[in-house]
Length: 531
Image (cartoon, rainbow, N blue to C red; front, side, top):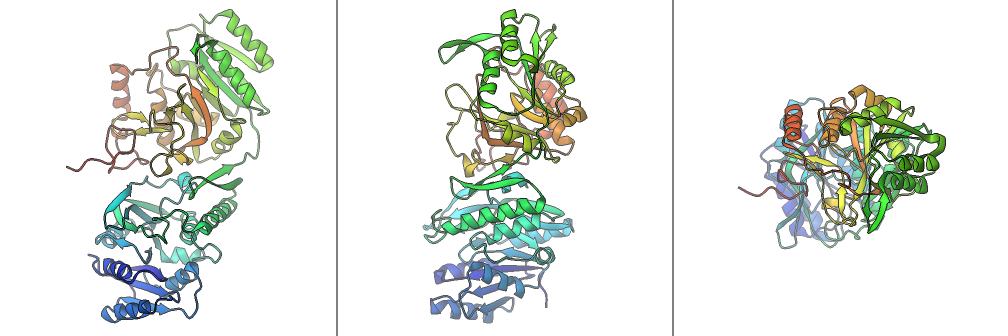
């Protein structure tokens, strides 16, 4: 007799009462067409075997296998998979809990989407005192973030035929065996669904990563190798590196070619005080690029207002020589028009939009940005920007009622909620203060709208890129100072608000990389207050 959903649970020496609670959370599901495949990996506590046998006798849907030797979690998981008959397999650790409606929700979505191959849910921790703590309200499917951290596993449900097709659980990945499996499944998955509510409670025990991130150090190296093999399978030139905090990774892409990059900088040649020193903004911006960047093929398109002092142009000519192209602009300020004009004069395959009030921090920053922008599925990539005082100016956009900069004014060295500020990830948009894209993408979407002179032009631009089917990526590995508002007041006008809402009112809510359980009209991932 087959089941719709097979729950796979490898077992090794959990506290007996905890294991009983895990089993009970499956038995009390509102959906009845399940089987629970329990594999005892030769537990040293003799009560575990009898507890499992009692559970099997009490419910015909519970299957138990006793291994004769300890093989580790991957071997036990593989045995559980071999026992499964379900259309889908669900991953449940021996000390965690499922919401009573979890399996029913999966079955309903599977009925609505016959091509469902993978689903995952939001999760929270269960403290030793029995309290639900640290909820993790996740983004919708975000492949670049998944290459930076395994944010999905709890609660994961996978189509069994696809699991078997990609080889099931593989030896050598203990501690990250689920990560390795999900990477292989999602490489081929037709439809991926995110349940935007907490289905799974991850119990905080001293032996679990939920209780102690250092409890299983081998797991992180397994995760790194799983990611490296994932990159190799997909033909992505990348090196995967572990980083802090443990459980996050740098998926360092490598460029396979060095096409020309056209750096487009709108300016009026303003000078201003920065850190107590008078400086010409555009000259110092260009100087900082030259000081940090060794990319072999650059051109600089300076879109200059006619009021730009001749000495500024002379200074740029001295720095750049033949790499400089000055395009004059003689109309009232319109950032969008100036960017479009610069792009029209660019000869590069890649366009870097750069404000004139920047200072580069990261050496050879284009070695990070270029290979991301070369991915044909990615339309634009943005950077981590700081104010002069070191607080965060930009970590990607978030649109949850209005457009915001994520984690605005947070400390520049903070990790952010669930590592948000230290992982490369998709976001709904990025600022045009520093954004790299392929020229073909710019042309495809028609550039920036001239209707938005000063503000929200990058919001509109991002919306058009996503509307064309591209992803947008933000990386924490390119850092710059942005001395914002040195030349103008950035407060959006009522007109700009009206334009962006008229064009995108339905898209300013429901950011796929935010979460409806988080508070609207905020940038800091605060939980929505209970009503």
